[in-house]
Length: 385
Ligand SMILES: [Zn+2]
Image (cartoon, rainbow, N blue to C red; front, side, top):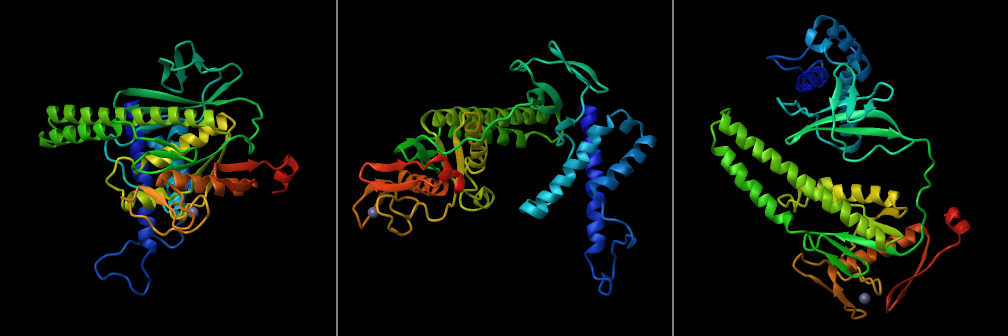
């Protein structure tokens, strides 16, 4: 399986190189090229795409025994992934796809499996054969295993299965207790029910441990066996941190779903955020992950999940709607000069999020002393919206 990863990596790098060369050859004006050197690729050469790269791959496979050992579909998935990386760059502003160093290619996707690939505690992988697996949970009745993805992590190999079942799952509708969330660094999550959920201790303690291990690893001689050991320790801790974080997010998402029928969050641009002010903090990239998990759990638990406009949520009074001006990060309390309302700033922001969310799903919101009061529209009204 490691060999397969290595072959996949070669395919990725080769295909990326081909694409890069093509762009370089097209980036200069024909009457203003460099004196020294210029990439020249014939004008009638097509832009490398999934289709023609996959075709070229079939040709390469004939000559190269390394490539022959790997299932074609797996290598085609590598090219598909590259294509996806390019479209993400064009359409969603992601970075330019990068070359992968040894060991950086970590997963194999098997888009086609044999019928009934799962046999007891083994799974049948094309060309590799039966592989022993320790299942984390049984495969539910009525589901068919369609795809598998194998991932190499520091602690070992993992397999992820894609299951298919022919059922109709209704999307959650607007009902029940509305809850707005505000994420931040002081308290991880603030809810419009005036709850503050702090970040668990490991959010601070584990990165500290990681820095220590990284420092130790950097003192080892590159390539030596001690260096390899130290690198492995760092990789394992990285994995542990990711596992802890994910576990916590899943539990938190379930807890929130216990108390809410609708959950609203701010539609934040985490990419821009991570580059800016909070870039040093371990939490920066995590909020995006949390929202992804929350959205998924909400769908599973039949809770409506909605992202709302995030502008100025911390500057508006949830009681009277007045703009109270920008707050410094250190200013933890929201105090309204119009109506005298006082409360935690994150809670105030989450209440604004809840109000915007409710407005978006078509509930009429009345502001009362006790907080939000909601009158639900009838189903017909909701569909009309
Ligand atoms: Zn006010």
